[in-house]
Figure (cartoon, rainbow, N blue to C red):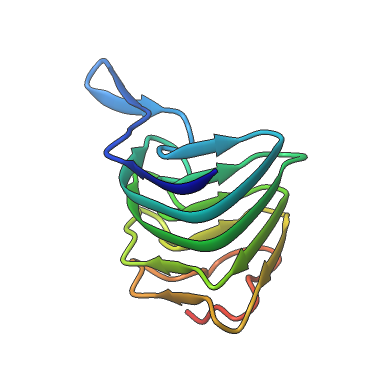
Length: 138
């Protein structure tokens, strides 16, 4: 996917007044995704990955991607359950109910180059993630 904006999508439903829903408000990847010059903004997921979700056995490569989103549980910007590579990207100002708000790595492998910015996410940028997200602090 190149030169694209994914905005104002959501996977939230309501059942007996409780929010429920899926993952990956902007994009849910279960296979292989290569993103270049993509903006993920103002997307919402009911579970994980308001901007983007990388599921089990998936590979996501993101070059010059910007993510500003929110989610109900955790991983407001990105939820990763497999392999994620970020190059010259921004994961900023994402919000989630539980930490982390920026990138939630759930047992996967994350590679982050030195030019990628992960900041201003609430309640934290990447903590707690297991294993930790490299080049991400707080």
